[in-house]
Structures are given as structure tokens and as C-alpha cells.
Image 1 (tube, rainbow, N blue to C red):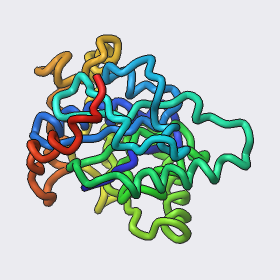
Image 2: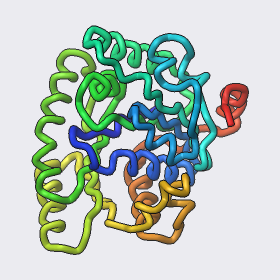
Image 3: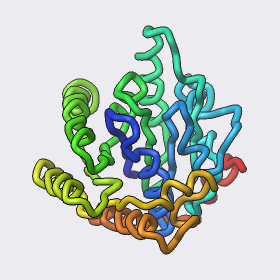
Length: 266
């Protein structure tokens, strides 16, 4: 089971867009995918058609309900979701460590029933942003194709290095993917710069700027269903194929369905 934190230290970097649409594209390929929405805003949950739930990821973090018993069916075939919990935001700093450790314990107890687990991280590297880095095997970093987004990578890489030294030595940079790429010379230059700065981690597939991607959340379905022939759908399918190169084929869906069927909610 491949566990991936979709993260960046800046907001508005296409994290949720990448989480939702990569999950959907992986599902199309036959992979079994679990999305965990750790962003208190719950954008991934809403996009995948899960709204107004009474239980979510905060219940697992606080030890009330295992993650595997918080699964919701989504609008994307092959994808299930542990929804966000706005109540996870706390004002008391003394709670921050407890929440981070709670997420680590929740992830450690998760049965290996999926090919891929994608964690949609919050738009900062506070305690909620650190938590998935301590619990996941790798980080996938979406980066908008403009200068400020690229310069903001420094703090994320420094944070990952600290987490690797102190908490999670297996954490690695699983990929850097350029998003909202357009035809301008500046956009092309930034894509080239990312490839030069991250030669081992840069993903050749880029996500082109596409209005359909901006429209899809309003309909609560991924781009692969909303506009299956759009460039956005094409790009996320290509990203899914490239991202899984070298990894085993999808696990047997029947065994997963039997194991998780009783607890998947609708």
C-alpha cells in the first residue's frame, strides 16, 4: 500500500485538484484508492460528493473510530473517502502534538486494503500539515507554474528534512508536478527550472491550465467524469500512469470489497 501526502507549504497550489483527480484517474486504471481529507475546509470531500457528515477524520485522530470504519462512497469509481472534520482545528497549542500523534496512530492501524492512499493536506505546514509527513511514505508536491510558487518550495523541503531526521526516516519526495501550465514563455521556463532543480523527482507529465478543472467541483465529480475528453482529464490520466510506473498492478478488487463492504457508507 502506497501512502502519499499531497502537500505544499502554500495555499492555492492545486493540492486538492491533484488529490481528487489523480485518485479518480487511478481508479479508472483499476487501482483501489483511499482519499483522506485532512484539510478542515473539506474541499476534497465536497468535490467527491460527501457533504454534511457527522463523523470524519477527527474521530480517528482522537481514537474514537478507526479510519477503516469511516469510509464513504464517492462519485469516483474505485475511490473511497475519509471525510474532513472542521472540528479538528484547535486553538490550544498543547493539543497540536496529540493530534499529530493521533493521525500517525490512525494511519499505522489502517489495513493494507488499497493500492494507494492519498492524503489531501491543509494549506500550511502547521501541526496538521506535519502530521501526514510523519505518517506517509512519500510526498507528492503540486506546484503552480509561476515564480512565487517555486520559491515557496524551500520551506517545504526543509520541513521534510526535519521530519525525516526526527520522526519518519522513510519519508521521501515522491514527485513534483507542475500544474496550471500555460503556453507562455514564463510558464515553460518554470517547468524547465523545476526539472533542473528536481531531476530525480520531477514528473514529466504537466497539468495544463483548463477551465473544465475549475468547473468540476461545482458538480461534485472529478474531471475524468465531468469532462472526460478535456485536456485536464487527459493530463491527470497521464499523471496516474506515470506515477505508478514500477509499482505492482492493482490488487484484487473482490478481496477489498469483501473486507471493506460492511463499513463503506453512502
